[in-house]
Length: 255
Length: 252
Image 1 (cartoon, rainbow over the protein chains, first blue to last red):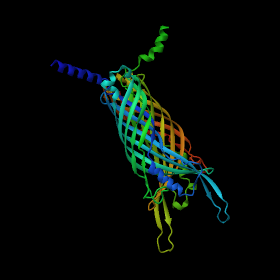
Image 2 (tube, chains in turn orange, red; image 1 turned 30 degrees about the horizontal axis):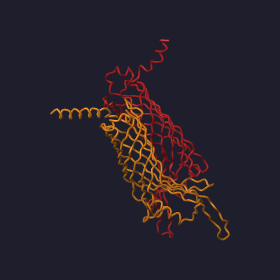
Image 3 (cartoon, chains in turn brown, blue; image 1 turned 45 degrees about the vertical axis):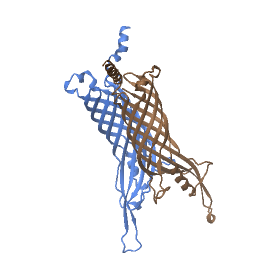
Image 4 (cartoon, rainbow over the protein chains, first blue to last red; image 1 turned 60 degrees about the vertical axis):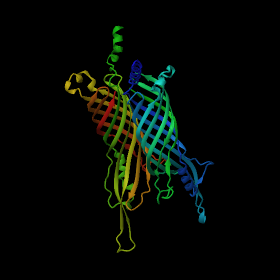
């Protein structure tokens, strides 16, 4: 009986400690670098470039392999160890390559060389839900005083993506309205990240700053291909596969 | 010396008691846009091929929508400061048609109706500050107003705007190419808000109406290929105008 009372008392004390920061409302802003898995996409682009009249004007062709990610989340601490929130993020990847186009020369017409810059961009806007489990609020973490200013958490998120591929050319020395071909697709994003940071303040207002590293899965529907699309026809239109590692920094604040 | 100290420390005596000091607000509003120069350009027959129309009717882009989010902190009882970010857009379309003449006089010509789309949008971000009338003693003395909040806010920020135009014809596959021009400018907004406090306990939340005026004129529209819209005359985007909308806020 005495042992039972001791166990129940310990449990209530622990739960009382867990009850302190529940209900906190906070904002998280983050910026990361994402790696993408755009093999299928880059292969389709390479094939189209090699079949065109444009000649690459540099030694190496630049492909899209990654890009910057900017995120914003609003979180509510539903218990000591868990929070739930909504998030939005935007990430993109770009490449720019220089080409020359040699035209004329037939039937005595002068040969003309023009310098083209071909821009490719893939981007995605995500809206979704996320949840965090705070390792730093569990009992074993709190046992160590030196860890009191360190926060650590695992984030899981699921969202819907509005993605797209944009392509346009600029010709050097020829002012022209930029005609961008915009190809829109969508998909479901799943993301998990590990965060470790420093608690700047932890009283009525809380704020922290730290690093996050994780993995994102996002493979969109097929890009549109057709008669009037420059790069892709209906048979070979690729998907945009944004899956890959992600790493960056975050800042949280709230009350 | 005593009176000097009282004068310096007086603002801190009206510091809030740590309640309702952190606020997140979402709002959406309907916006009126000036767009005088822009509307002049899109109606100028010099910039549209006569092949596409019988009669050039006047169109104008005069309105749009805005979605915005802000985070603010109330260091003093009547005043809050914060940051905001928003997205606004508007569009107008012109009816066009293409007539393909047939080789013989007995077969009617093919007419394909279409539209020329003109879309403007901007992403804005900046700082805001609000004066909270419902935290003042004259407001609190009225018991009937205890659930009503009202404030006057000023926002100053920067906007990145863009203009897209493209044609779309029935019977022709769309090729998804848009002519894109960009511009930037300083934005200033003043808003009067009046709302109802849904809850006032551990969390506060409120919903209400807002009425305001935006000043936002951009630089000349220019493409990445260094061309202006249009090729011989420059055009700005003028998003200035009145706006009316709703807000929802949550905080602690």
